[in-house]
Image (cartoon, rainbow, N blue to C red; front, side):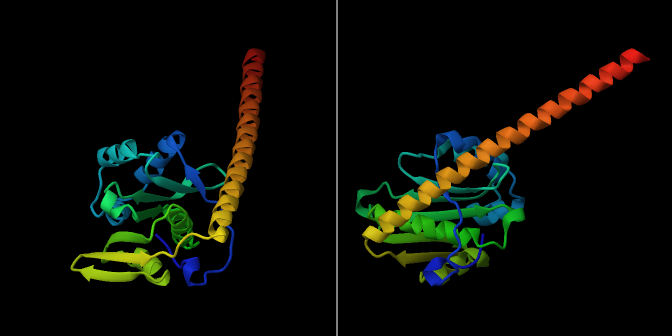
Length: 219
């Protein structure tokens, strides 16, 4: 969980953030399982077990909700956000935001960038209010909310932040379209580079094995 949001004048650094679908479910599971107990506690409000995390990822409805992710060059999912839309027709204009960032990727503003990406998507989907439910001790998450202009209300060990979103504009729609195209291209390039590196590593391993066999035969 991370730093400032571009809603609060964060530097305009492009971070490739792509929408995730069912084919990314295994990587989502791997990312969450890699969180330590305290990070799981902050993300879910309790120290989720491996089984509970598996049930959570299995239950993700990619047709109803939106999941966003940031991949590194090794195609490891290092940060992800879940934007859950209300299934209640009376609360159709509301959505809840949750985020997690791998420990090795902290301090780069990824949590705030994911919040911005989710907020833009929410606006374009007609959402007028975004909510964040977090533990009061989750200072990083609450900082993201406050920097975005959200109202934070504390109730003992838990806090709730709510941000009023303006209506979508042509700019927000074009911004999201461009962001998704950039992220998709970035992912394809990373996948191709990884495939090439894996192939080279496999070839080097085969050569090594062949040399070992030749050496053994010569003895």
